[in-house]
Length: 322
Ligand SMILES: [Ca+2]
Image (cartoon, rainbow, N blue to C red; front, top):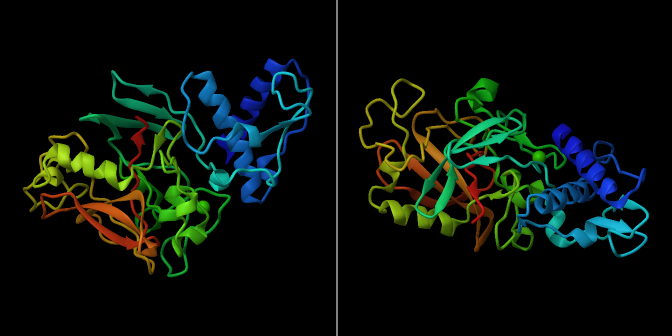
């Protein structure tokens, strides 16, 4: 929220400079409890970041509804205010809780975010994060009702509620709606109308998005389905990697899939040596309480797929917008 606030201030300052203005009203996102209000601020930041980099992002940006002036022309308006929630387009019901730009250094295969650097990897035509996303405020996942239910805060679980268990590329664990940056109610019901059919950014940084089920299929196909999982599993030694008895992994793809545990839908955590679980941006079309996830298992060579409860806490890998 703090980064978000500063980004918004920075964005507004840029805007005012362009307009030759010296002052106007800004709704402090921290003072507003409403999803819609913070959403509009994030949308403003996103639109400016996108235009200043010359790269238009497709995720839920609606400039016309986020900037309201006395004139419909931004350059000619004498005051710029961030709108309240009434004019926000339906696509911006996304809260924008991680509206940051993380510069991408292709030669070094990294992106640099406020929370740290992530390694990345070009695999076929796609650019993937090679570590799990690790943003948000640690919340407990121990109890059955310990859901990521605060729509104004980006929440994450770490295995056994220990913050350092999210370090070292392991990343946070997120319920589906949190990963998608949608209201927590979307864990229980279909929210198809809120999902960007193009690139749904979710809690990924600007320019990246939660991979659709079809993008995981592209990855698995490129790596050869029968051995894709083996090629995606991080090779290493010791208890922080795959079960020592597992031999069917080589990480030839550089995806560097880590065994990261997951949070059970009913609370509590799986041990950290058996699975890597990744959300997709795709719901189960016949069960709104479920979404598609892909997973690696210590004893399998494939990248498996199934529908499962959105209340699970799973890892997130972001993929760069094509
Ligand atoms: Ca939340």
